[in-house]
Length: 372
Image 1: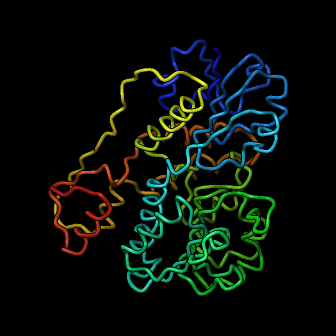
Image 2: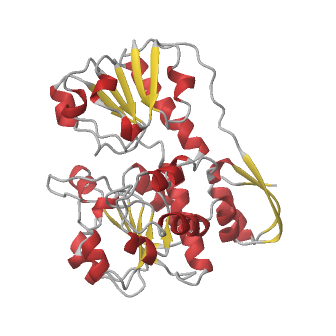
Image 3: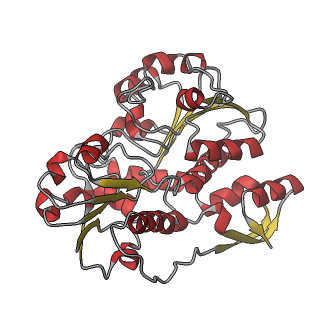
């Protein structure tokens, strides 16, 4: 058996080594020649998987350590009889934590109200519903837009896109789709942007191409942009990077825990579908971190102590903006993303020596933080 895998999939050798030949290669560099005699292909979102890649190969299983599948030509894979899977929900906790860290940073800077915040969550799938739960803990006034769920669930209340306006925060958690009744590609466009109020926060942790970049620069400059994903990654628009309040390199779903969770899901699917034979493996323990906060703090300080997107924003601008040519190289953006391997989820964090209000302590404990 031959398995070809993106070398930047964490822990891939822990699960898939020992099944024959394991070829590790950077995801953007995987070619048709690499997979021609392969049985299994393991990828991330940076590898387009389609007829051009697999037409003349032996591949029977494609596992993507991602929550979305817009990089997979699923129709062609189905027609070709190739089993494919993604790791649904594996990154929902860190994305929800990411949204909280953005809110904490905005509130610390006085860019988002401390109380009576009106928020819209567009997309209420695995990630969106967890984001909604987090915002409910903050007592935000939440409006939800997910027409796809509403069409399937008679009791699900979804506000139409055309009615979304007058919010302090809009958070996007949708898949990238180009067809169907509710396509999301470029659905954040001139009409939507012009309807939003001054200084409304637009947070995108879904896919970059759901926002129309040119129309954003022309009609959305009155809003505060907090972007983790970018159209045309890794060749991102430098003007958007310069003007964004928060800018991170597609790492909202990255955590020490999600990296373990993702490959574990794909391995178990490969076993369940009989692509490989299950074997005894040493379980990877979900580690916890301990942080010491000396003195009085607020919940925002604790969340930012775990992960501060403002620091990453500064690093990203320093690394990417000096390069004058948007289309120079994949390396800076990809390197930042691939080296981001140290963030823990709130649910795996212990904190000590912290003086919190009763309300903030209760909030953090509901988020899974252990206080000692």
